[in-house]
Image (cartoon, rainbow over all chains, first blue to last red; front, side, top):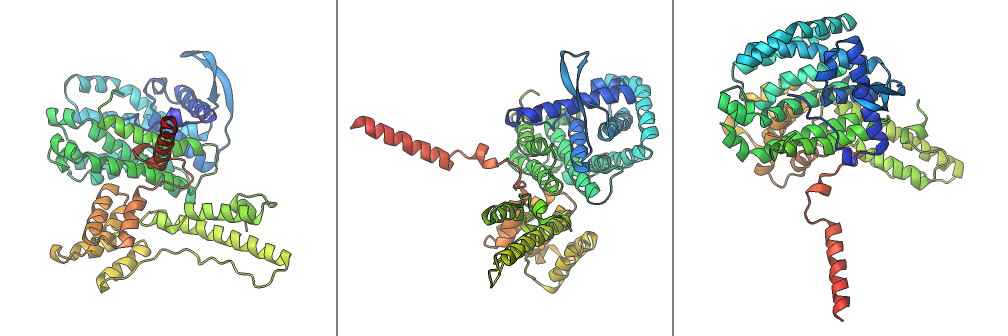
Length: 282
Length: 199
């Protein structure tokens, strides 16, 4: 479901590429140490963006140290553990657990068995996250339960279904923040969730149609053929979320992450949408 | 109060033109029109106020320093415009500006389908945009523009939905347009070179 929100590396300055990679390596290291070694394998770009947004909006100081890890022989700049990285790892752990619970209800066959077997590991991640940030579990669980109800009722308004998932990412982005910082982070978080939910629905429409699974776009446009006819409108509304992220972030910009965030909101999101529409391999 | 030069992001030794340029860029970035229907519109308005005050302070300080009489900023100030329709729709506009979105939505949905004007679709689009339901908002704004194609307010709001912050270097035209000014210029240069070769 995840991994759509990433920068267009070709358009990024070299210093921003290094900074972005240091955040990625930082979460991987911090999550592996403080939450669970599994976060290292499951980590995706959407959460790196979440960490970047929290670092940028809060203006938290960070330190980058050259380090080696098991995946690269060469030393790489790694962001040392800080509040934003620890929180992102915790939020990721919590979401993995509640998403797995949801998948067990929805999936069938081998996939269900596989999720059920990995559930104890996810539960441990969620427990650790809750211990570090009390209330994070509810911030994820409540909107996910609402989404589950909507999906069961066959909600045919894509924005309404996306709203519940967006609530999860909005809660995560603004967790523990206050005032204008919280509002800006919340709005950006909302559009991350809305974009991820809708682009995932667009990506999976044919698979869902075959397996007769819930897909808000298939329901709204009466099947994948209808979705293909309206693909221009869907593309525009997905890009609108990128524009909304850019406008919201403009209210809190001025950090060293500006280049990364504006790149993702513009080029990155457009590249992701076009990749899905043109059915290119990820 | 913050240092006005810091607010505009310019050096205190900057020339009047540099200050004006910085002010214009920021005013464009936080202009209320860019944030119409956005849940963070009030934050943008605060930023705009801060920028206006900083620019006013700097121009006043500099005018006093130069002892030039008849100071005037020559700036009309920015505000989000809006014209009122019927009584009910006027009330909806009031509710939206007071951020009472649910009440506005209830009033709008009470109006029967046959009586829904372009303004109704425009305001419903606003309600959806406030809820961040951008797909629904776009549908309503497009319908409003279809019903009243010459209304600048509806057209601008629809266009602003896809506009990025002016700080962003991202522009869709750079990738989407097949025939930009650069292509025209390049074409003309090539034609000129060919003509020179044929002489």
